[in-house]
Length: 285
Image (cartoon, rainbow, N blue to C red):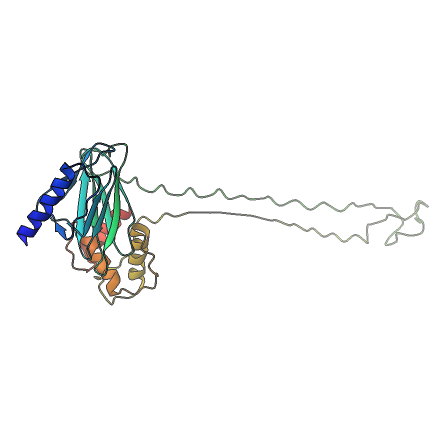
């Protein structure tokens, strides 16, 4: 096996040295860090020791790699931000930007299928603050809308027209003054005060979820309930898996969790315990 690996790596090195823009290698396992040279831009990328690939195609400005099922492939650039495309469902791809400017892409293929990814260097280097990768700023709390209150319109007082000598009549003539009683409203007036107050209070508050309530018990294959739904929401938000949020934790999701744990320096046991929960919420924030 070692001799086959050495021969495979030697073939790759000779092809790159000869100036060929693409190369395919079957069943490569890198026993040491290896350099890949691109021509546009003219930079070197580094494949980490322990990476596995079914095929590796080196173009002028991209690297296309097929990672076998359950395999992991790590590639980095010392001076350019790396981006990727072509990931498949249930695969886990992690990108980091570490001090001072190293950009790294870690591809972990699912157990059921291989994964073909295109790696492209950007125009600029990644930039970090001291102590690690580019920090994600905390979510800004939404500002509650100011309630809008429409004051009630006071009722218009009834017009009182008292004609002496008309009593309860608004016809005929006043016995006191002889004037017409038309318009007399003293006794026929119904004093009704209607006060209509319309208060419109619209308050829209948008909450950006920054933590996931994963419960106090360890989640595992077969777990059910609201904590599992929160885990599914996290996987959909961060890994774009498109899982149905049904609160049921099955073997396919566990396989993804194992890959994610391995890619993030956790024990890849598929158990969602305190350390894994803490890492999930740290990424969410």
